[in-house]
Image (cartoon, rainbow, N blue to C red; front, side):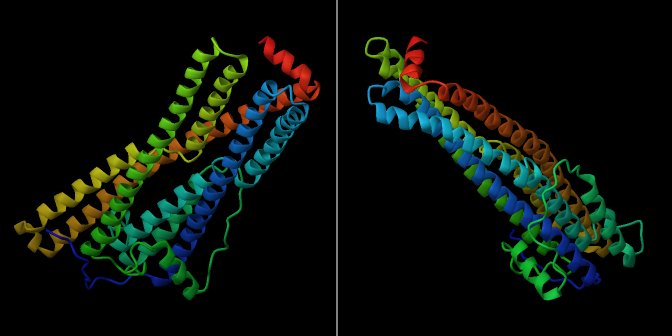
Length: 368
């Protein structure tokens, strides 16, 4: 049975509080998106520079007979690690290592409380007079912000909007996948299922498939590079030393592909999203089975079950969010350490190369 949005005559919400709640959430939401884009894009530049420098330092030994090319490659292998190190330090200072993750976590936690408040579910269902539930929403939004430990301070990308029309414009952006939702009214069960549960399921489904496909692509590409290196290693024993250098190049390419994938967290989240999507599907199925029960004709019982549905759905999303948060913090910190470690080794090698002539560097490499 299809579920369609329903407009129900329900008690009004505090529109002014909701406007400011959205305004605050949007600051974290847009900052997270901007920081994530910069985080991925700039680190991939560092990975690319590191790969070029590594390949140049390997090829310089093979092309030692051509003094001009060997000199250019040697200069490249010296300069690029310095540029990449400077760029990486600048990136860490101005985009942070985990800031985008914390901004995203706070934004989604705030979104959860906005939905719970609009559904009068969970903590907004009891314990206070209805007219004081907006006070509780404000308290919870403040607690969310204070619950995250900020070990690096990256300012927000936008200022919090205060003009209602401007806030409403941002709300449309935040609810781009559910344009019918103005974000400011009480939700009926049909609207909640369509705009929250089903919309989130579709988001999970798209990201599960996309994340898995990207992970397969990069893993297979890295394995293919290693396979080429293994073939070159076998042939190198019977052919020439120059052929063996292909092994080092393919290894460098494989490492770069792995780092490139790790920065985008490909393959890190699809299993988590799949579990959450399945749990949401279970909740929808349970609701469809519950709808035709005789007890649902009682208005009070029906309202209780609606609130329970919202509570369970948000609990699933909260579980996924917390698991993702811990995983993302660890994954991105490890990735940055790997990139910095590669840069440190490359910079040290560049320092050694800079003290040698291309010919001397070639002779040393040939002796290894």
